[in-house]
Amino acid sequence: MKIRYLGHSCFQLTESTGTSIVTDPYGDVGFDLPRVNADVVTVSHSHYDHNNVDAVGGKPIVLNKEGNYEIGGVHITAIKCFHDDENGAKRGENLIFKFRMDGIEICHLGDMGEECSSSLLEALLPVHVLLIPVGGNYTIDAEQAKEYVDRIMPSVVVPMHYKTKGLEIDIEKVDEFTDLFDDDDMEEVEVIESEESELEFFRDDISDESTQIIVMERAK
Image 1: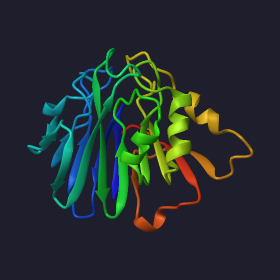
Image 2 (image 1 turned 135 degrees about the vertical axis):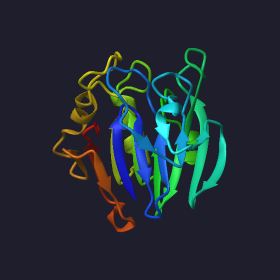
Image 3 (image 1 turned 180 degrees about the vertical axis):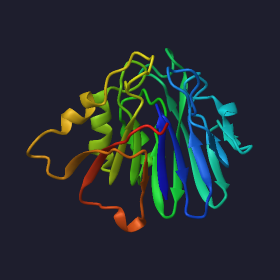
């Protein structure tokens, strides 16, 4: 399966069969969403920087409610949680989306605001590839995101929802998160600064013994 980073919290996930999913397409955040088609669009919540479904071509099915779905051979689970740490009192609800593509479990946390709990972990696991917000302010911050990584122990982590060039949203840069893993004792975690906007994974790439944190370039 392939992961293409379109910026902010938006990814295009493509299974080997060709089924394509776009997550959280954004509106005017300071840069434009690339032209992209999809079979499915997932929306974690209704804020403008996550719900610009009209920008995605191909007449996709839009998923914005909790539930289990099977579309184009891809199993999708939408799990309800909160956009803040006050049970939604500040920012409402958020949907986590899990996708099983080519035998790989991908989890997109959306604008996760909750602290990591055992009950939530039970609903999420297993996770091979974790797409996680790290910028804080509107979501979990870098230290909270690290706790999710430490407890989920995915094979691959791709940070999202952090400050990048042109982004007009008040959140922190990705190095606030990646710097937390700069420890000589953490040999099982590798931080990779990729110059690519697209990555391809096979089931054999998934390791239970180590974690790669891959900071991707935004597709333009």
